[in-house]
Length: 253
Ligand code: NAD
View 1 (cartoon, rainbow, N blue to C red):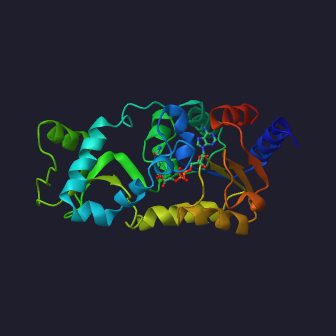
View 2 (cartoon, protein in one colour):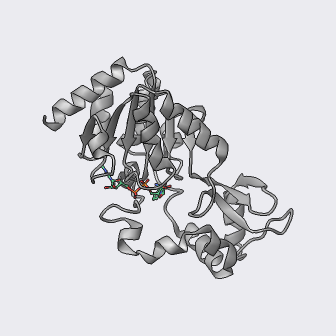
């Protein structure tokens, strides 16, 4: 079956589905200029040591790691990035009443910028929009901390308790928020169509979500340029660029 036929088939499934759940990964944001981790130009494909530096243990134990992380964040393009055609297609799918839950591993806020409603999104790996204090749990807009870094504080401490501040993202070695994981699992367990978009499906526990969907008898669709461990279990796999394939599917729904 060629790609166009598969696109039409997936669109028919979406049209017929009463509950559709989408899981997105870093691959939906590469066309917005944010590199993924494991694609050909991925951060870890190019620098395997970076994976070790991304752990919570390293961040908590090393002031140098925190200084480097705030410096990296100041220079990063993530705050200025704009949604692309793939993100807009998912916002359109929601407007069409055909997207019940959007689980994202991305921390870049681009689904929200594209117009998906926060109530339907589970940001399972957190968000760069906020900071959190690792001591007292205080949370707020990250801009406040970035302003302090720009004013010369290399590793700004919490103003309430003196604890270590971090962006409200989930680092490797850090537990997910239990409530978010439950929402994601319950959505996957009750859907009729489950779309995995731009994810290598290798980061657990998120990578286990397709199993819940498959157990529920959902049609499982993968949109990803590279193979994933689930390709054989999927009802359809599409390799074309997300920014082209996803709008083409949503147009037909
Ligand atoms: P990943 O890097 O493991 O895999 C991304 C996949 O997307 C790759 O298989 C790649 O081939 C595919 N891909 C990239 N661009 C594509 C395109 N235009 N069309 C089709 N396929 C494309 O990503 P992951 O599975 O999300 O896991 C990475 C982890 O890193 C996640 O936990 C996420 O939190 C984090 N992360 C987030 C961002 C972000 O917020 N944008 C960026 C990098 C990493």
